[in-house]
Amino acid sequence: MTPGWTPDLTGHVAVVTGASSGLGRRAALVLARAGARVVAVARRAEALDSLRDQAPPGTVHALPFDLADRDTLPALAAQAAAPFGAPDILVHAAGINTREAADDITPGGWDITLTLNLAVPFFLSQHLVPGMKERGWGRIVNFASLQSHRAFPGGLAYGASKGGIAQLTRAMAQAWSGDGIMVNAIGPGFFRTELTAAVFNDPARAARNAEQTCIGRNGEPEDIDGPLLFLCSDMSGYVTGQVLMVDGGFTAK
Image (cartoon, rainbow, N blue to C red; front, side, top):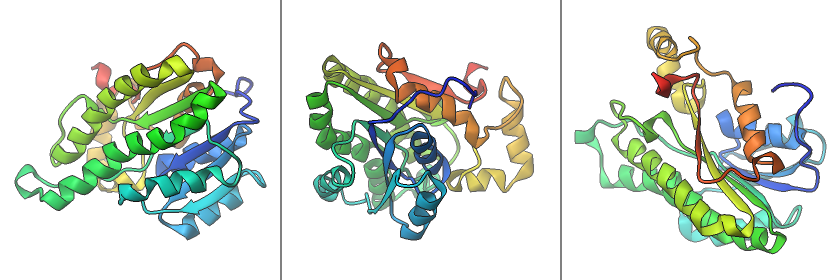
């Protein structure tokens, strides 16, 4: 994160899903350090507790929750508004990649992938948008992927969900930006997270991915900070419906 330009998010309340690890955890910390009060959502309570301890005191509320059942999302929305008030920033970082070959995909694997990666970002947003409309200001950031644009081996269900995220982002922007709610997506390249462990556990494969970027390296956690803060602040007041690829130029080649 470039020193000296960090927006002040004091007075804003953010909800970050997938906050126990990876880019979701990074997002929660970055927003908290910028002054927002953050409701961190994930299944693993212990990981959320360690996140809370790492953040500035009093800025993070840990909310253990299993997003797999979308019928429980109204309860999540109510609980997310309880600690700090109605959220006006929502970051959808939770996701799953079963990495199954096309011939091996099961209905169950398909359903959980599409639920967590595509349905939850819409329906949780739908439940929290009324509070943003009342305030006349909101920021929703979805997480897209390299697979929003191209196919990878073993990624059919995941790629379908992330292709859907790109269109969902545009459609949500069309629906809600007139109420002051900017909806955008970040498309990370290869970052070392739990979701990409299979890639980084193979040094040769990780090196090949780095070589395919314009920059010549894979992503580091801090590479997400600036794009995220831009999309979650007043700085993006005339930016909506966009997918910002944070991939070192992987998709530019």
